Image (cartoon, rainbow, N blue to C red; front, top):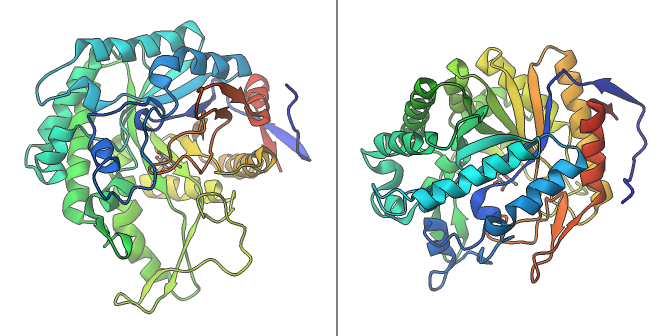
Length: 404
Ligand code: FCB
């Protein structure tokens, strides 16, 4: 396999023991994740979810191959999530067999010289949780604390644990109402739910501290809110419950995961609030998710996170692009890494870069937006590494960050 190398001028050495890797999430790759509320929604009569997850990438069975490809490319870290709905299929019922499954994943990583970065919660919940109040249940903190305790039984020799992925996206999803005429309506984040999620994170962190030996934090969707000139105050108001509240919660953590894809520009709108996200200007390059092509976002995300958390060590736990053109993926990632190098030169303490995603996977409703460094055949599950995998692995091997 030959790697496509875009024009670039220089490389900066990355710090020693920098983590270079890729990320996935259980529901998006495992397949057959039938006990989650998401699966229930996907297969509900009249569902508005365009495509169900089905067998996804069958990584539940093929994880040794996935970890092997990542290791052979030269990467040194794999971020994946454990699935609560498998581990605690009914409230209080613990599946030893499923815990063993995740322990085998951790062992496979270690056998291949890969650092496992384990996410405890990545968007999906067991059906029983969804049916019994979700974040509105007054037992939500205790439930997540107990789940964390259960997970510690397989976390020996795991160095980094992410408690909750993108709590600031989940707070929107919790409030989303599916309207058959207008699609999904996000009325805005609920401070009540935001506080409930934060309480669960702090309880989980306490358990992990007591367990010892792991560094923990959560990973926040950094949306790079920029203001139309003169709309800075409204931008700040808009971003508080959508991002900054969640960054503030990380102030006492061992690290924070930074997840960056694009920016959102806040300015005047015609709706009741009078301000909000602006439409993309005519001619903006859009990716397969419809997002603006804006690799510089990562640099802004790191600086903003540093400023709000007061300097908690950061790790890029997601960054990538949905595209069918792998050269564009390499160009995007070069731009993002270059912005990361500038932020690091500017004092940002960044400990690793985990690309989203290792595999073309189930993007919460559709397989169409392909984020993977590896293509997956939808019928046979055959894995085909893309040139971007070897390219990223090459940077890892040399431990250098490209400067565009
Ligand atoms: C993030 C999610 C991840 C994936 C990427 C594209 O918001 O954490 O699961 O969907 O976006």
